Amino acid sequence: MTDVIAIMSMSLDGYVAGPDGDVMGVFAWYFGSGDVAVEAGGSDPMTFTMSEPSAQHFHELTSGLGALITGRRTFETAQGWGGNHAWGPAFVLAHEVPEGWPRPESTVHFVTDGIESAVRQAQAAAGRKSVAVHGADTIQQCLDAGLLDYLQVDVAAILLGGGVRLFDHLTDAPAILGNPTVVEGVGVTHLRYPVRTDQP
Image 1 (cartoon, rainbow, N blue to C red):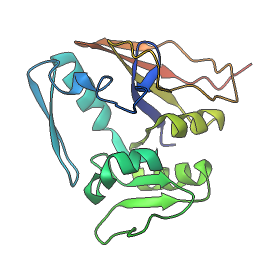
Image 2 (image 1 turned 135 degrees about the vertical axis):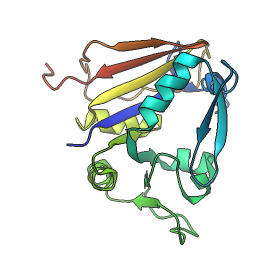
Image 3 (image 1 turned 90 degrees about the horizontal axis):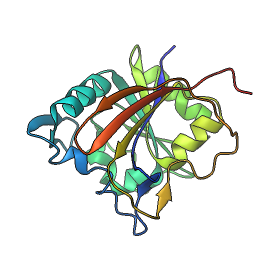
Image 4 (image 1 turned 60 degrees about the horizontal axis):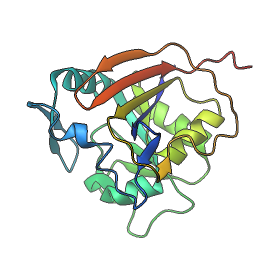
């Protein structure tokens, strides 16, 4: 079965965006934590500059991804990734399909019938690769539904003091995690936790 991996950067005090919605603080390690250039594909490619440990971690993680699940807010903030996300076909949770979508040659799909359907579709699209889940609300939905295999949290060396929390509205808590693997970067610590299935 294809693994489903939550992937998110957050501040040390648990926020994925500041009070004004700004996310650059938690993603600063992508842009200038080192001098290793990392190319991101997709229709709107970017070049990141990371420390060696973060670059290796990022490459190993993203090379194993075959699809993405995310929410409408992330889709809109990213302006639809130019129609094609670097991690493969994107499945966007939405109440309705936005005007002007779907688009020809785009691999962005809209799922209006819930998180379980999104996971099924993304796993089918990913084949033997893993499915990434991005966005606070989408990750919370997956965790509550028991659909996550791993939590990949990149803890940035910043305290935001307020904003959007990654784990603010969990309904199925406590969620017990397994022991993490840890990669120390520059300005960030990469933590990967297995999500235990033997919950209390």
